[in-house]
Length: 409
Image (cartoon, rainbow, N blue to C red):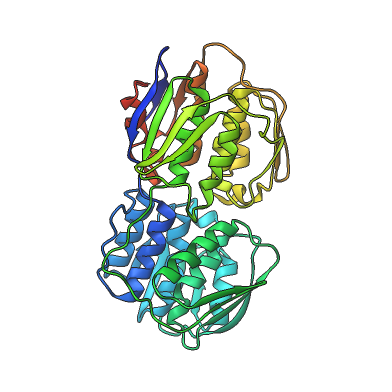
């Protein structure tokens, strides 16, 4: 499927139940923890996303060549893990992965005794890792670049001699993802404290359970909350999804709820129904803690003509694509006027009403494809140049849309 056209026929309804994929962020953390523990813990609900398959393959392979593909979590979580292993390893990824900086994590690991060399551009993968030399201790790391650096260090903390004391420099971005890492580690017996700007991990191995359930993915759920805000005939159950969670993208419940998605927690999952947008809808949104929500939120607001301002988007430039630029290009292709200044995006007009064809450039980015699928609910025929990118996080996304009557050509 090299190109895909998506259309929502008149009268399409979102009714029934839907099983979402397991959380990719939880899955990749648990896979590293299980590998460190050396146990065979069952992980029911484990994500089937490409990023998770890459993590599984890298951890299971006896090869010294480890490939992270385009996955930021795989690249960043594997690096400290490999520093603990005996042997020498080459850690590489896709071309885009080699453009994404990793120097803050490398520098932090070197303070702990790691032996890492850059094989091409300084500060970026691919990397050569000589394992077995990682020690515990105190170190500082800039917290305003990527929470994944912090989570990567925390995950190996219980296996460092003397443990780890990590001082965060500056305000942490995507803070809920750090809290998610802490919650999972503590569930597996790690002794960890977060006091002011310092995280302390005791040298105590994980106590791996026989089985550990992986929650459905709130990042995937967000697309359906957005569709519910747009499609009047919606009565959809997202099976087993819970409002009480450490997942950062649970923020979608508040934002998308105010924009027209009614939410009801039930024992068997989260029920979505369309409702009028409320006065609680914000004029300014800050994406610092949940950057992966922002493409979907921005496209939804553009379709509704909600001319909001979106701040705290700096980390979007370092994702699978430069998401700020990708959003600007695709919104303008849909007829939206946009103003971008640094890490701020302002909608200056909504999506024009009426049928039209819109060409979307995915830029090898799964979030671009899925966010702009919302245009189908605005009478647009949406043409995607790289539809397979959804496999990175939500492999069944197009099939799930087809199951509700969307036309895929």
